[in-house]
Length: 416
Image (cartoon, rainbow, N blue to C red; front, side, top):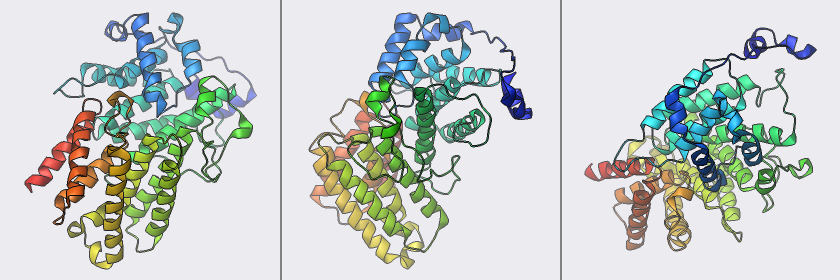
């Protein structure tokens, strides 16, 4: 089969097409029942592309509707797995129940079955990313961390973001763009899953400055990619960049923050990271239609940079870096003011439909609340922000259960 040749002697693939067999993997009846009929599958797809796809667009909308919604494809294991993962990520967890639902367990088990077969495709990888996103959004650990690492390895196996590996080449520009986007999606998740616990090695390499960013989101949804309009990481931020491209830039910065925090260095890298994040935040806010998912991702990255210094009694480095601790307090006040102006008064954090929201802002909401709760000099302004953010976490808990986990952690802090 193709995967075996790819790993044992890939040079054979350079001499033309090799006849390979694809063993049939039957779809278990309970998996078919979970998918539902064609109308239900179509409704799930619409729900995904109308909501989650808006802030994590790594599946080609045109290719999906043109190919994978055809009933003739619904006997293929990788297509069924992707459809089931779409149903999982668009499902709300039961009220008061665990996000480890029967559907979640079924998807996890079927993923292992498909992975252990000779089925080897980008659809399996896309399903894996959706499962990892589900686990991250619902606070399912260590599964989220392990799943993201598995996705990175699967992408490497497919030859995505790997040089000198003979693999089946993407035929169209849309396919090339889809491979690029799924790699960026893994990079984003790989960094965000460790935002609260720096120190663990990343599963993906740091993006290079000459790496291409995702193309225009709207055009790509229509099956159009214009190579002459692509930007790299070294390109200056502009309003012409897609929302997803801007999020990728923020994810690269978060990776640098995590590296800095992991190294326990005494240099002044944090100052440069502070300036770059502040510049990105200003640019993100100073446009007609701000992308609040990108903004909350930047807020979380900025808070992560200073988390240790927001709770100085916990860390011995406080005495050695009092200037950074003072800067952390200033950042906390600045973020509190901006939250009040941009996220509370404008209702772009609390007033949105939970189904449209990403989980990126939940980390900074938790840390800001915790910092103010521990402060001995809390002013009424900060008290109102804490109250609003806690209400927001409670509201978003219906969509992303990790919001409720953060609320429980805040209650635990109050009891200390």
